[in-house]
Image 1: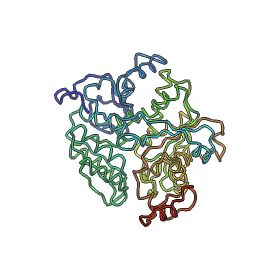
Image 2: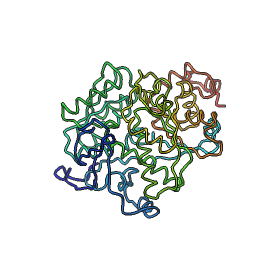
Image 3: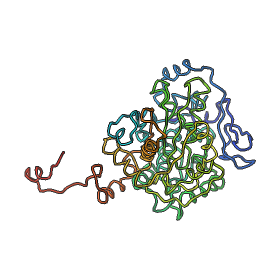
Image 4: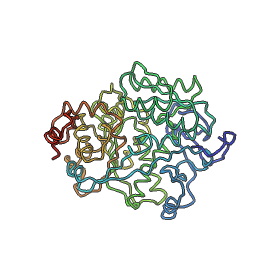
Length: 430
């Protein structure tokens, strides 16, 4: 929770600016606008370089007393914000091994960075820790976001932690029940919009101006700063020896942009000798970024998104401008996989005892696809990011128990009589 008093909020001087990616116009760090007032371009946060470099900088992270996997990297996230930091803490998520998932993908060295083990069950908590901290620093009267589920749940939780009112717009009938109930439980005001996510994002941008609320979708550059720590923490866990590939689900593209920024800084500050190649994976039912990649990013053509992977069910990704350099600079690849491939991957992750929501499994499905296509060599080191917890979308698990076949199919409870004979007859454990 915030460490500073309300009177102190927003008064800490820090050497950072917000800069437009499109035209270069700059804004003060405490300016509440989410896009450039000159051209409407996306903003990035620019810090002064840290005093330490290389091994000394890595050692400073290791010696940090912060329990947060975000604020431990504060020198590269939001320097000078110590008074206002909002935290549970978040981060410190594991990089897991699974022989089952490794065999299924064909990647002989594979780790699963499980961001579903954050406080509200998704990677969004890292960005919200910084975004809600910034809301306090600028004296915001409340916060707002559009959401397919995880963003709203995280915003509601961190806003409650900070004592700020929260407004969340969701597409009516298109949000998983686990995510909706989280957002409700944390006390946010929820509006179900008769439209899709892109309609919700358009409305929250207008609401931010009309109602004076601080916008905390991934267009917000402070969200990106928090999400950079997924990569920084992973690199630290690997002894600052980067993998060959880093795969992630791609929806609104905030994470793709954040991963690129983290790798760019890790290289510039001597933390790593080289960057892994990024693999951004979309569902074929919501794949405008993949289509743009195939066209060398000449254009982005929005689509009407339709995928069971609700967390990436986005047809017009807001962070496109930030994400393109991340793919280009890392010689990355963008792929679309089918919903069937995503569910197959989820089945393997779940059956391995790890579990994830459908959108998370897109990264694993993408790894399998690139191994089979020959882009990923069997001996290369690969990390796939799982972005959300298995309980984020329980309806999918229940429906899969009825509709799918095979070893990884979920099993519904079998109702039996209260006798040991009935239990023994029904207990097929092998």
